[in-house]
Image 1: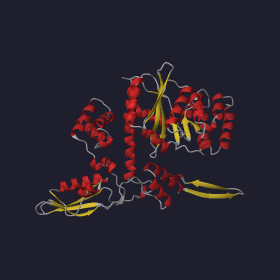
Image 2: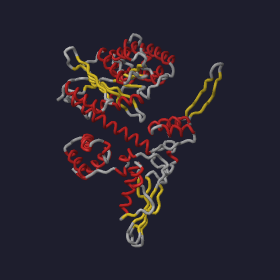
Image 3: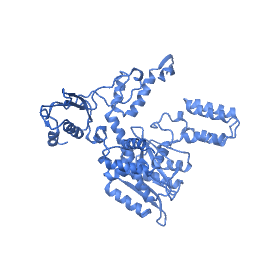
Image 4: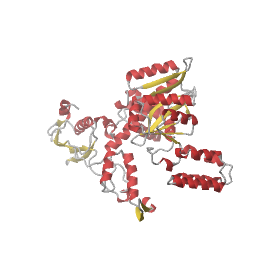
Length: 510
């Protein structure tokens, strides 16, 4: 807000208004421009029962009372003890005057986030009617909401969020009782690029000029990769359109623990040549910065392409896909249950490579599986999927491609088997905008709330100020778990010291 504009809207003692509501609307307008939420704190009435005094405050005033039973698992709170407030009273003629103002906040303010604060969100009559009609027609709520977003001209012009629509429809239900070719895509992508120079796309054509493969990434995806591109998952198991071209998304994880899209392709084939083309184009899009790690299934063509394009990246196989195959591979065996249990125990409990290898050989002897070709192949590539071989590398908390599959499920509500290529990329854009809005709301939550510390450690306060709510709670869980660990004994050798640490599981489950 510019200085002249600020001076006009900033509350000052002595300002006069016609009514209590006019005072409140003035303060709300000021708060919206500055970027903080407001609420009515208190009021007083005269002998005739007429309100003559009011106090409005920043909604982050006060502090949440401590609950000793949950101090080690505190919930996020927006209350910071903020002292910002405005008081006003009326005279005998009914004219309201501001009597006191405190404008300083003990937290950050942000005008761009004002639209998400609850006190400013509202559904107008037109939107309510549209939601009701679409609900009766069986149109999913997220599609109705997307329609309203388009009509409004974008998320930043909305006066409510999807949650408000869902709450309204839930309430209403209780009361109710009862052009799709390659040329069109190229034109569309060229148009997108003219609007956003950071938009990137590439086509792969056959000898006759027909479209084989296509890749594209929005500028936001490219910027996200700079922040969250250490580890990428890649999966192509999902067919999305009437041409049966596999959808191939590159997916990372952001600072909220949410999946974030880092570009994607539509492919005509799933051979090594196709993946080499896709990976090279994606690498070019990301300014030739390869990820530290990449997680895929066991597809040989993908593995070959990774060795060609990302020779220095760590390649990890999806652990979930491997373990899912166990019942199928050993369904015939009379000791199937014991084999499955042994493999799971080895995978999740082995702390070192030697421990895993010794346990593996013992399992093969016990169940007479030394000649099992599938197990032989898995053991040969053990460094790609067994956790104890991978724990020295950073994997952003991921061990499977389910991030990619989750992204596929996210787009499932926007595309179907009849979707043409041009329709697909248009719907994809709308779906991506919805996901960006959800990330914005997560940013808003971490901006406007905080999880209280449970210890007096300076380390915890540092993480509280630097981390998002989701990541800080993960750290806090580890920190509180440490409280239940005790050093039982130590054995000091010539070059190292061995400690025996025990954990009180009863306490850790509080």
